[in-house]
Length: 309
Image (cartoon, rainbow, N blue to C red; front, side, top):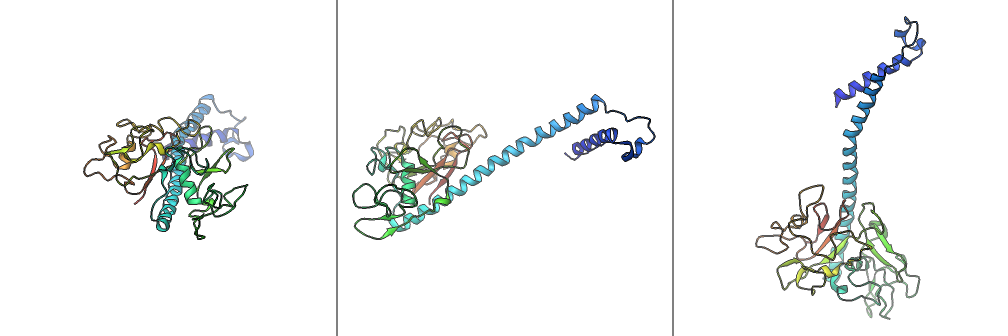
């Protein structure tokens, strides 16, 4: 790199000496006219500049990618801390499976939107009051916003729990045209089109009835695996290809940017979606948070994953 930089300096210096006014260029005082730089010299300078751009651009793109990864990881760790605070109060983690078979709170959380259960649990944005329309501790009538419906009032107990996260602590997306508003946490990667992708949330099944890590289909009964895919909202309007709503492909989940698979990230070294002896599966006894990562595809090797204790 130093040699290339020296070459650039020499070439640019040569060009400047040729075009510099005679009074400012002592080497040109003895010339009868200012000599023009040659086409070859110009092409050499342009070629070196192009080469430098080609060398530096991948490093700049990698740095930007890592910045998004770091920001997403930081957000997910904030969510993880909030989940632990929730657990300290409630003695359990939010149940992502509560909407596996149907919607909840009069449709305030649609079927399969396990990641919206996460936002509701930590922010407490559902409407308040004992009417059954929600369990928020704030407003009892529209408009319902994050500012007016904070925390939980566990009716008839007047004590308010939470909120466990502040609005500004993480990237939050409000689903358009929903009342009460539906929110979910997003990663820090720029959307590739449409709505930003959610950070998926899976609460672990304490005693699954099979040795599956993820249920093999999105319609599997809750409790059959550690993590139930039916907890995902698998609409094509909010997700990329390869899930959620479909089981992570075994043995073929490497990312275009590396050779590590999603299963290796969570501790399934055999990459077969089953619990084997000696494996320590991330979030096995608590929860799993999953971001689609830079490629925008869930369950690949560049996913950003955080698990509970």
